[in-house]
Length: 351
Image (cartoon, rainbow, N blue to C red):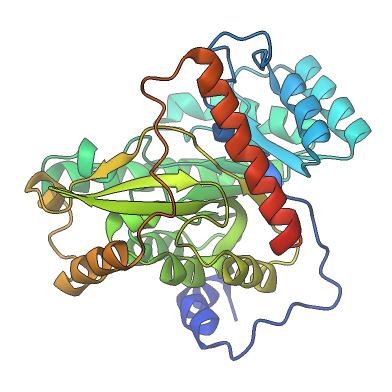
């Protein structure tokens, strides 16, 4: 079976699998950290003596060791060879893995920058770099079908520029489902590209904002995934749709044990990176007109099923809020949510 045939058959195979038993030789890695779990602390966005800012990947790697994390996924923009060497030395000393985060080239003129960042990531020890096609959210960014079509063309151009570069570099590129592509669209994109070097950074919760059940998203994309963003989601209704939040693992509606097993079964070497973003709830205005500007082909049953899921899965506690908290309180809340997630992962997910 070639890569194109595998991509076409993978979602069905995952859903049809009668059991989720793991290969006997599969390693049991520790949960890692996606830097977005520290969106407030990284870079000093809030000031505190108790929670000093993480100034670079080196500080975060030290914190990973203290947390008992297995590794770190972090942006590599601007890394020079000497800094990448320092990252490698520290992560090796701590026994951690590293994954990069990188921006796609939009034009030929950006390929050199992309290649330089890949080299830095590889020098630090990364075998995988995560990327996104869209930095924002589909239903907020685009006002028309034409704008969405233009984005799709740009994404294709970027991936076709990136693929030969990652192949030469001997590294894998993992495209996140980032509130942009619905599953069928993402599978089509990767099938057309047909590369064993370009796969998925599987985010466990993002696609709920596009009216796709997390269980279905994970089952469909796990066979193509090189790495993950592990998260749990909670939601509640509001007048234009629903509010959506990351919550500490085990406190939301995601079937995390099944998600972890599906990913391990598809790729025993996959890394699991916690993305516990502590922020105000996101509005998913699925009852508003603009939301449907690019999602008109979405079946009505998906809207009905998602709203039913939200109604049937009330949050165990109020959705997280950062607004109104002091800097110290924001940092403490962020750290608490990360640590609660690590406790759950260790006790329940064998991570």
